[in-house]
Length: 551
Image (cartoon, rainbow, N blue to C red; front, side, top):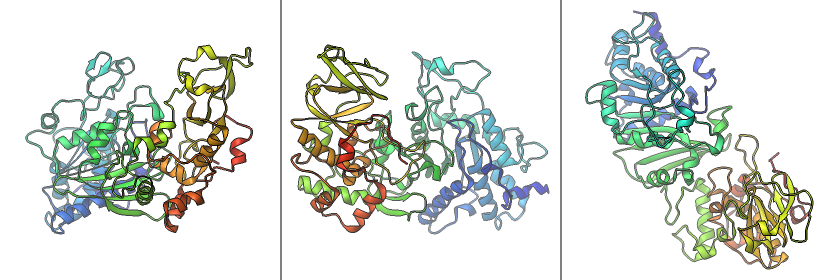
């Protein structure tokens, strides 16, 4: 038989799939080690649900990667099946042919990645070629399908994915980024068209495109991964496992409905959350971390949540994804007990993780444009009239006529706090401990800000504003912000878990720890996650409005 069948058996050094660079923001390749971690979780779940059976020794199980890129998931599944089916199908060539033709299927996201996936799986870009380890295919593509798919434009947007026609309707010579798996109204019929017959997959797995490649970037790009998860569920697999950004935990930017459906789905059996995406995808700029989940159609109950960060001990606990009264997923396991103590002290209720609206610090925080001025607004360099107000803006301060301000007028002559809307960070990396919010500062009457800042207030006196400022500098306060914060964008909503306090005193973490009865372990966790912000003198001294970055 062809000696290249040995591709199925590890020992290749180096593994080419650890060496290739990502092609674009929607083609993030999964490291083989991480793909195998996900497959281990799947195998454990299969054994638990099938009396200890080995999924890799079952020749009837069908696997689909509906957005394959490097082909790593398909390759690693094939390798495991080749070992697991050795006793049932002793002939290696017959075993490999059975696995590749009957058990392992993929859909390429671009023409290039489909060729790469075939090369990874078949050792040839032609499934029926002379160098292919398979011997039973009649087509070049084998079981890795790809054909150019077009968007369906309605009023300048794609009906299925929301892509911009202006950006992606660009002719036959360039990729459309119209992914076949989500560009259909009937995914079951579409799968039957692609692979024939009444095809049903036991396992759907992979790493979907994360955002629309239509001109957006970073946190401004529209998420798309949720569409792949929702479509996969419609195929009703027994198991579904994907690696996706963790921002869905708190919703926002088109993810609110997805968040609600995921958190209310008791078939979500485990989530492995990585606080830093760099721990999974080295060199990939993705704020907010990533997670992989396992969904089990036949198994309901609370979810096993594991939190990973660099060399920290893994925090793992089984709990509901949606705590009573909360509208988001509480990301840190330790954060649940801390939040319970805070809210129980403020509300007198032990089982509901929600503050009454009148007790939320959120009600003091402005919308994203507190005075109606955009980030790019630049005031005059010098004050020209007593009627001018000072503007804290991107890169410094300026002045503008009071009469030009039509929003937030009730805050102009009040004492207030300004805090940057974008949180501090170090490049594209998630680091801990960090400050969670930009350095806030007190501003007096006759001041406003552009969209660069949120405005907190009004406060009746400077002393009240200073009290609130010391509260914001406390680590516990900023941990409560972090529990509701999906990305570096710090909006009013992230203050939902923060209670309003008495503004006639100076606040410190020691005072807050005592107020809420936190344990030594809980205090240690807070101080591992949240950096000190500095003394009151630092916060009230000469104000620097340039964006702060962690060291």
